[in-house]
Amino acid sequence: MTSVLTQQEYFPGNAMGAASHSARIEVQGVHKSFGTKSVLRDLDLTIEPGEFVAIVGRSGCGKSTLLRLLAGLDTPTAGRVLVDGKPLKGLNTDARVMFQDARLMPWMRVVNNVGLGLNGAWQERAISALADVGLEDRKGDWPAILSGGQRQRVALARALVNQPRFMLLDEPLGALDALTRLDMQALLERLWRERQFTALLITHDVDEAVTLADRIILIEDGKIGLDLRVPLRRPRTHGEPEFISLRQQVLQRVMEG
Amino acid sequence: MSIDATWENEAASRKFSRTKSIDKQFWLGLRRRLLPFLLPVGLLVLWQVLTSHGEVAPQVLPAPLQVFNAAVHLAHTELWADITVSAKRAFTGFAIGAGIGLIMGMINGLSKIGEELMDSTIHMARTVPHLALIPLVILWFGIGEETKVLLVALGVFFPMYLNTYHGMRAVDPGLVETGKVYGLRGFRLFRQVILPAAVPNILIGLRFALGVMWLTLIVAETVAADSGIGYITTNAREYMQTDVMLVGILIYALLGKGADLTARTLEHFLLPWHPTYGTARK
Image 1 (cartoon, rainbow over the protein chains, first blue to last red):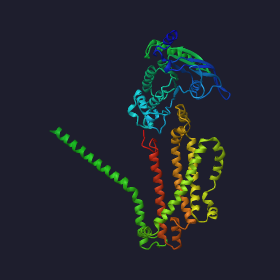
Image 2 (cartoon, rainbow over the protein chains, first blue to last red):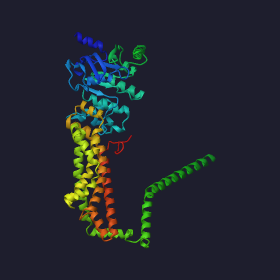
Image 3 (spheres, rainbow over the protein chains, first blue to last red):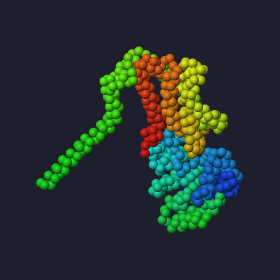
Image 4 (cartoon, rainbow over the protein chains, first blue to last red):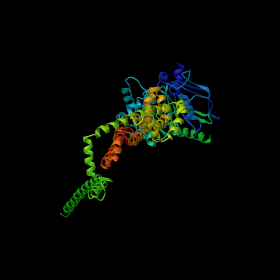
């Protein structure tokens, strides 16, 4: 009972009983180095089920490295990653990743891209996932004729159709124009609330972090420099005084580092 | 009244300019379609005029009509048999050489061990022009079918191998990673990600290989054959049948064009998603 209450306190945006749809992620004493250069040092981090965490930091601070470790695309030099208490070995099958480039297969039509890796009667699922991101009518198109925002929406549908319990977002909106980005943020937030997955968003846009995240984490020099809760109600508007002051706080901290 | 008149005038002039622009477009379209033919047709006419008036001896260059007659005559006698023989040699050699090139390119493109074992040797062998092997191959096989097939296979192997290998190596690692994240392994990963990514390069190899195929066959049939188009051409030289020689050369040109068309058609059907080759465009 207490744990449910705490969860609700932590994640006002998410419904209760999120645990089955969402993974709990623990990073314990993780160290990652490439050659002699250490990128992450002795990093500890716990992400609760259903939580939306944004990671900010200057380029080269190790945030993408952390994402790759959590996805199981790389292994830590020391320390370990736990998913629901179990050490992660190899690919994180509970997780799906969205990258800045949508990484659609150019030789597959949109619906086949969404169905990538699915078995059985996947077509219906793929089409309903496309409907979720508002692109059902583009299912027969080649990716080459889509706009950047549409490609990212297809990539989002592709991730969602697998019903991931942990969604890793590596600056997925970084290359989009400002208006498309706002649309995509709203879409991401809506789908996160509906599907209740745990989310980790890497971004260099502090506004985006404050708009979407329950928690903002700043990584500097391979360590956590700031771990800040965002107590604002959703959906958030950029004009609120609390929003502005939070954004200021994070920005200042980033600039200092 | 005067306003009405202006209106009418304007409408009339607009109508006039529209018909004029349609006319203009029609003529432009016609010109675009006809202009490319002007030069070859002109040359043909010039050729006919020069040769039929005896300015050029028919042994040097027979008149186009004479060449046409020779073609008709040949078509009624041995031509089809020879085309069949040549085509059979070309495609047998092509199937063997391109098949091995494709498979080796895939193996070496996918496996580090294969690459380390074979790639440098293949590159070394590539520096030997395959036509330089003609005397040796004749020594081995005489002027039998094996000679031609082997030479074509050798010539076709290298462009096919190199482009397939390069295509396999040039697959975007981000896409391979995505395939893995989405649970594709082994053959499914190959079938859905690596192979389609390599197809544009494989088709470039195919195109080169088709070119090499005809070139090699022409040389091989000219030097060492007792049938086929190259043999017709060489044989015609013995009897000073220049018109027959020209027919042979024209047939090679047509076959080459056919091979090119085949490659283009394949590109169109295998790469519908590609912004350059296919129908998908921004």
